[in-house]
Image 1 (spheres, one colour):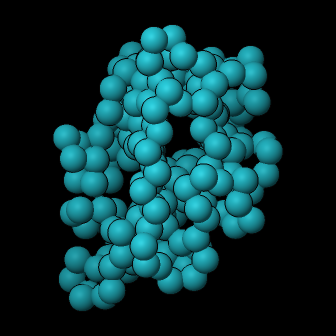
Image 2 (cartoon, rainbow, N blue to C red):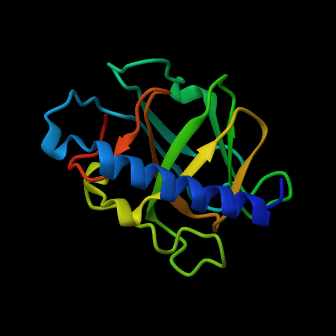
Length: 173
């Protein structure tokens, strides 16, 4: 897979769209029902390539609509000829990924995660430090520059919900 200008544009538009909608429908003042997002923590160490050397999937327990299981999101690092992280949505619905890093790659090249560091408690990460990627189902996926030694957190909600980027901790509305 190659990074293309189209992927960067889609990520930017998706970020603006999700942030704008979240601002309009934030649970912060509306008293709406909120749910925990699905949360994936993945890390690669010791020069590992391909699948994470450690991965923890925390599935959402309640949601509205349809949601993809965490196992349907394939995440690989430095495999298939690409020098970075690749995400493939093996589910049947779109996923809006919200990504931050807990270690590694502070000086990445363009399209990296250098400005997207997780808070000490990743659920407390402010929206300005989440890299938002709308990811359609299919083998094309999305890739982002990264080094081999990295740890990331990925959050997403159901097809009828979005991450409330104004709440703390992060939740689905």
